[in-house]
Length: 290
Image (cartoon, rainbow, N blue to C red):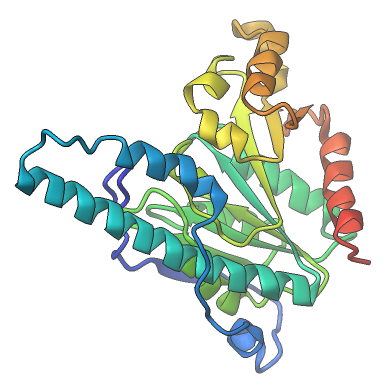
């Protein structure tokens, strides 16, 4: 059980593959063949604050039954996160072995993730090998949009779940079989809370925030912005029509995460898109992928 929102961690995610290109006979099982052995790791640091918050609700004056419930809830959460982190480490090792730059895209619903992905795929598919994993609770609509751009894609439907986890991603990688030295874009479920808590084994994290959401989102959802490497302020073509102060938003984001890179983009008009593509290419240079 996800203690932040109550979504079920036991629900089975559904995978749907959209890929018109031919794969090698063994490619769908590549991650199982190349994964490192599963050994225990301490929960990743990005979960620590969440766990401390849960633990702080335990008080000596609570009755025994309530204290027992809190203890079990905390232990269950720790077990879930520890299992997730073990699988995330396997994913990360597999990405490193194959030179794959995996990018986790996170945002609230409607911030423009899929529209940005469509443009990115269309503009870069002749320069980079690109694969996409789509996360939504239901439907394959976003995967169909990406497929129409000429990109292999796997849809993960989480049902009642509000985020992707490392095990879901592990299974989707096996279905997608991304090419070595490729860019893997992971569009997480629209949610500014839980996706920040679950390490997928990705190389980088991008939070997308549209100017229609209000400039105080970094203060309201600090963990998401603290856990991200890049903030994309999207839909800036709407700035003349909405009350949004870019400088104030930048200030709020930097209060939460002083190291956060911030870019302003419009997927429809093309503003700032070249800076976004440069940032992607820098990830390949940074990780030594040729």
